Length: 187
Ligand code: ITT
Image (cartoon, rainbow, N blue to C red; front, side):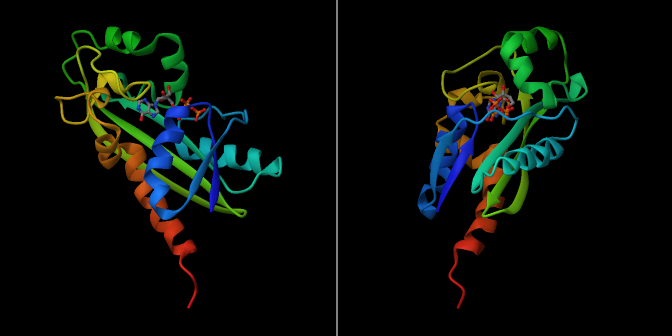
């Protein structure tokens, strides 16, 4: 099976390929721009995105909408995570969090998968904290300032370790179950 990963972010494709390679599913990076609706709900963004892509005739694809939700900022940047990352970046979040005691945050990832016109939607989460400074060079996006355990940032641990506990890793575990059931030959 081959699935097109519709994203502008090569970091996501690498994570998906690593997490699905053993199932014999090949991931192909495809960049197709589509409008992400403005809503506070990741799943709604994904559902609407899938509808828009299917309307162009596309089949057998994955889209993923993720965000980092910081408790002390009432869930910001959340669904605005991509915009915030592109504009003020990690330094902007660190500035907003200066002197803030409650540093808890949650990464969320909603994956939508089209398999021959059928819809699968799963959501994974990863709780953690916003560090006081950016650390590490692995990964992408908010990885240098997010720590799942309060010690190492996601950018300081190998991708294989991040995948075991990350929001995307947890969403993928759910998606794997769904895809495995479909790949299993019917008796
Ligand atoms: P596409 O929408 O084109 O797939 P994107 O990078 O904009 O790519 P999202 O909207 O899903 O992806 O992500 C929102 C933001 O959250 C974006 O700035 C990402 O860099 C960041 N992000 C998502 N997953 C992340 C992860 O595992 N580690 C660090 N940052 C992440």
